[in-house]
Image (cartoon, rainbow, N blue to C red; front, side, top):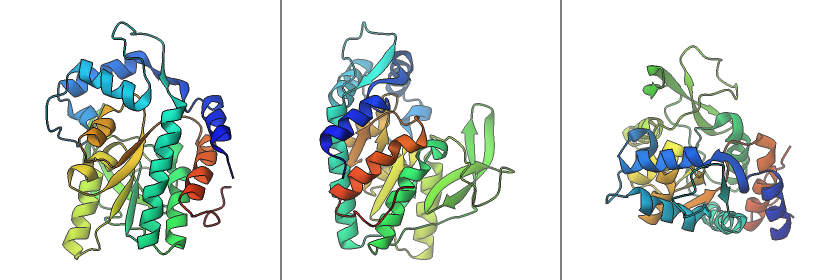
Length: 276
């Protein structure tokens, strides 16, 4: 079992927390876009009130540990590892509750190249605990905005985790998928479940639009958020996201291995999943 101290040391060594690869410039740009109501950073969330850049900076300082100084505009952003550990504890509690209730769960990621193994490990553990891991709308096409314009994508599942691929990309079963912020896939997936008569997920686990899109529709959602993802933290502050774990969401996929061991142990699911 990974101790809290060892986890904290790993977070810093892997740059999951502490000084991270996400730059201050990227984060501040996201806060400005969020304040302006840009859908690219709202991730499907419809804020209950207007959030100014200063308020967002204060929120992100409280939730992530980034500098609250608006004059700090360059360099790497910083995540407080203590906040990451505390959020992982809360994340594990919610997973444990889902396992205990044998709740139907939906997993989805906009970071398949980095985070797929993390979510797949959780999906396997919850499935072993008796939860139904949902895979709705597999193969359904979704037109999504990209920097190259609107492109057709399709929903796919790898090891129980939803992702999207551009049409014409590698076939089903491949871990390769598109980086996506869009809430459209989770809306389509939830709509397909509703049309089929359920069961609907009692928990959605993921990132980006999967979390914010689900939370906006009233489905309990937990996930991971970087310093340039203010929507997840606003969603948590406004009560539509249950837990957001602050960490760098773009490091090597194997660096998330110790986190899954920690979470599964805290959730009472140790032994349900062996990390490769």
